[in-house]
Length: 151
Image (tube, rainbow, N blue to C red; front, side, top):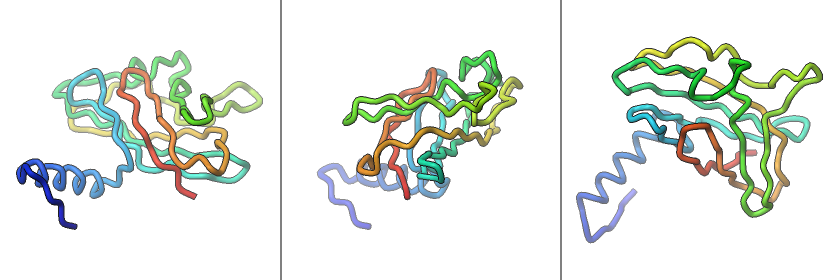
């Protein structure tokens, strides 16, 4: 891949950053309010029953422990407060809940995460219409991330 730029150093930095994200398998990244904490979205895929499954990784490179419980703001120790926004369709998609009001998502996020460690998580959502190819993913305390939907 060749990138032309009036600022050659900027082109190199862009290439390195893009390569690093692809090497980790991230399709989008959301930076946290706390420096050194980010979420890498690794998959957002249409799945059976008109649903989307999102896989993501909480990465802690902050130099101190962080609490996923506090990050995801859930008294249920899960990631139910993560949601998707289809800006074109002007619709918000919340994580799917089962018949017992349990989130169809990762649970047990109440323990602290040491610096230098990561935590793999997932959540299932109702799928937007087939013509929607990208959504904004909203994590509490993180910058929204636009992620492509795969089939």
